[in-house]
Length: 306
Image 1: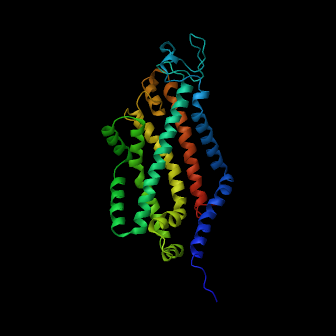
Image 2: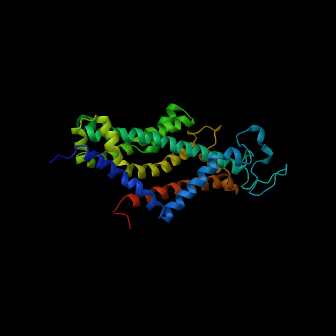
Image 3: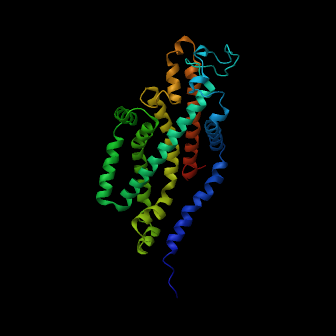
């Protein structure tokens, strides 16, 4: 009788890891809340990406704005005959255009910052779980130290040192958020580390890096997918907060947080639209992303699935 091939466990593990991914879309599209959140997000993202073509004006082109059109109410007509659907801000910028351009920055900062934070956190978490010993001790103590401080406070300190700028905000988000992913991936990897397919890969002489990235990582993606989706919304909120406080995106760049801050002084005078409409756009974007993340959590967790 021939002995079974030692490569079977690794191959079977790959099939097992791929099965949830194949089935994920079928279950996701059967969830009305998840599909609704995804559609809203896609519409907002498409509008933001198409801003240079669909926005009535470039709100940050000084030749396209007129200070005499400042603080026009929604639907009011300017001296030039232009009707502003959502009004204008104190500098005469069309609010529709400013919101569309602001969404571009918010989405870019949230997505790019989250992707780099996930990459760093996943590498740190896998290293800690698989190698153990002093690797795990050192990395997890660093994670604990990072998570012991409020994220917004750390971001404020970093930007006070680095200065304002889109790249600075992205770097601050990466440094603030990576520890969360490291803790999540380490917990998932500890469950998988001693399973048969990992032992089979070790017996076949695969390198540690290959085992971590090719065999261990695919079986730990479910929690990272959920946490990463929700943390995109958190990153967008962080950027808006930092920009509102005046330490994030510079005034020469569009940002929803800056737009809200620009209209804050006019709220009490009844000129609500300068702050409220960018705030509503930010709320819609964050709620849509959170709905997707929450439903992914329910779909991927058998104990929460109904």
